[in-house]
Length: 80
Image (tube, rainbow, N blue to C red; front, side, top):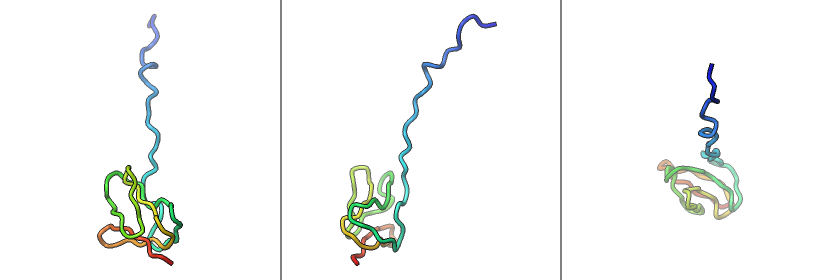
């Protein structure tokens, strides 16, 4: 039998928080200014008209309207 406690408790316990990435608003959905449209790593989707891009590549609406996806992965807002 072991006379010492097993090592490892002090080496465990590190884990990063989830990032919740992905598409938050789809084509044709109404949105308000400031709504997050896509959370992404890098520019998988690009910002079009009425869409801003954050430092972490998050795309968000600058104006109210409907979300519109282009065939070239460009996201725009169509004003209503």
